[in-house]
Image (cartoon, rainbow, N blue to C red; front, side, top):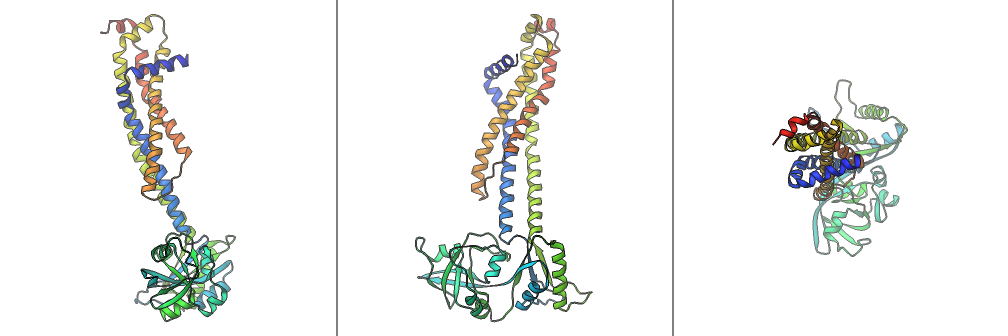
Length: 398
C-alpha cells in the first residue's frame, strides 16, 4: 500500500513539475543555508583553533604591561630561569624578542622581522623545522649568526627550486647563515605572521639588534598533569615578588593561558555558528508554509477526484495518507537538493575564505530528516481536510 501511495505521489508531483519545483524552493534554500552555515562555521572554528594552537598547547604567555604611571618594566632571562626553577610543573620556559629588519639575498630584499629565540622557545610553541636543523646549544650560548627562515621570507628572497640551506643572507647589516626552514605557521603570540619572520639565537638578536638583555615576553610550557590554575597562581605570586610589587599595587604584567583562549574562541565561534544556522532555518519555516499552501490548493483542485475515491470505497485514512505522502516527498526531495547545493556551496566558499572544508554527516542527516518532518507537520492539515470531505459534496464540485 505504501509503495502504491508513494508512486501516486510521484506521479502527481510530475504532473505539476514547475509548481512542485517552485514550492520546494523554500525547503531547498533553507536546508542549503543551514548546512552551508554550519559547515563553514565548523571550518572557521577549526581554523581559529589551529591559529591558537600555534601558540602551543598547555602554555602560558607572560608579557609586561604599562602601569598607571606609564612605565613598562621588561622581563629578563633571570625571570625566566627563576620561573623554570621554582614553579612545579613547568617543563619549559623561554624568552622572546623581535625587531623589524630588511632581509637581503641575491639582489632581493624584503621587510620582515627577526625573532630572537632558542630551542626551548621552539619546543614550547611546537615550532617544527622542516628543512635543515634547529640551533645547537653552542650557537645559542655564543650568539652565533645563524638563522631559521619562515616560509614567507623564503618565498620572497630565495629562488623556489633552490634550497636556502647553507646560504648567506643579510638582515640590515648583520649577515647570517641559513641552517633551517620552519614549518608553515599561523599567527604568533605578538599578533604577527610567524611565516614572515627570521629566527636567530636569542643572544644574537639582543646584542646585534636590540642592544640590551630585555625580553618582549616569555612562554612557559607546563605538564598537563598539573592544574593550570595552580601554576598560574604560583607564577603570579613569584613574579610579583621578583618585581617588588606591594599588595595594593596591580600587576604590571599579564598572563595568558592559551588553553583558555582556545576554549573561549571555540565557544564564541560555535555560538555564532548556531545563531546563523537558526536565522537561516527561518527559510525552512517559510518553505513549510509554502508546502501547506500548495497542498491546500491541490486539495481544492482535486476535490472531485477525492469524492470519486471516497464514493468507490476508499477509506478516509487512505486519502489522508496520500496527501501526507505527497507533502513528505516534496519536502524530502527539496531537502536532498538542498544538501547537494550546500555541499557545492560549502566547498567553494571554504576555498574562497581560506578555511578547511569539514563535512559533518550529522548536520546533513538531521537537516534532511528535519526537512522531511516539515512535510508531516505542514502537510497534515491539508491531508486531514481532504480526508474529511463529504463524497456527495465533493462529486458536485466543478
